[in-house]
Image 1 (cartoon, one colour):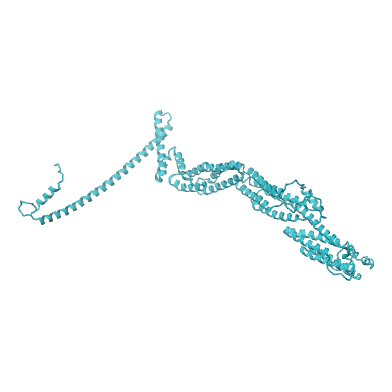
Image 2 (image 1 turned 90 degrees about the vertical axis):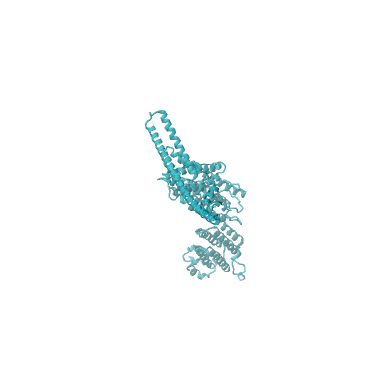
Length: 636
């Protein structure tokens, strides 16, 4: 209990020196020994160092023990606090349930319980929000598990959904941002919530009903009234990207029927736009097609005129009767076909885009009907307003059969029409058929296509028929102008060059040009069909032409030269029938030069034996010596 004096270093050293033998400064039994005193000091210093180290180790041990006990005590306090908090939350929940079960409980008590319940709920939500901002997944999971028993659990989820979207839409691509956000959140909700699929579904619903719906509305409403083309493009793009996003989201667990869930979300966004889609598509296509056509006719300085089209039956009847009645007032188009491949490509391109949008934006049950309505507009503008109009103009511009040096440009119309037919048919097969192939509309589409093509083919046939008549008329004009009677009855029989006449040469040159034009204008079997018809008419013309003259012996030789030249032209047709006809004509011309006694033998030859006797007789009658040599007896 003695009071401890303050430490005095000088006094401590004096006492140490005094206790050491020979260490006193004066007086003492032994004389002063400085070495011994130094040695004693050094030994004592070493002892003090060891003592200091020992005491330091003990201090460190005590400090470490103190820290450990302090931490354990803190954990105990924390556990007690949590335990106290949990007990408090159980108590509050219990009282809340008690409140609901006993409505006649004291009003002031009930109010206090409700107040404590709401305060605690609010504190828990705040704690969850703070944990979310700090990224403390464990704390979020703990609080979410507690809130699961509170009415405010749904509010906690709402807060989570709202907060996880903060800063998620920093790019301009809302669809890509949504996909990345959902991927990130999907990893987190499984660690935080006991029913992650419900939270994911609620997040996606929130995004669709707010972010995406606002984005779609902004993009579409700004062009709906001002730019219908851009509106349709935006609608197609937005709907396509939204459905693609929904397809990506199906990889997440969103409940038992996620496909129906996502489909409803898409429908809620686009239903009002899709209901009016097809009418807007048709209005745009109708307007755009009219602009394309009008721009073309304006570039030609052409004012479209009403033309009498007639029915298909009337045209068929004209073909059957092979008449040359004009189909409308005769006009001069100066060689213009009024068919433009550029116009056709533009119309087909617009229609192709319409088919693509129709396929994407139509309800599956309405798709065939909508696609058919787009096809009808294509028929109206491409087939009727452009092609059929050009055919009518072309028919009206075909000259009469007796016109001289006529420009038979209708073959150019045929050539361009064939090209357009192929483009039209390709789009029908590639873009329309897939949309209607499994529906009752298929039959209706095929019937409409057949009807419109048949109508144009009849007009093409009519034009080709009248063009062939013009060709024959031109040949007839050449023969009438160039062929002289003396060509086949030369004045000097002994001074004649055996060669074809000038008229024959000119006709053959003309025929060769026309055959080449037909080959360029037609394709496939049409080439042979038209050339067969032209060849038959060409043969008929020459056959009738030769029967207008009388032939001397030398003139018959010249006629055979002409027919041989015509036969060379017939080879250009590459049609066996035409060549056979000219072979027979060549054999008939032999009747003009053969000796009278040999007529019967020649008539019985391979090429003439099956011909009508009257026809053979008619050729023999063309000989100058027919009466003098009494050649008629050979046919009696």
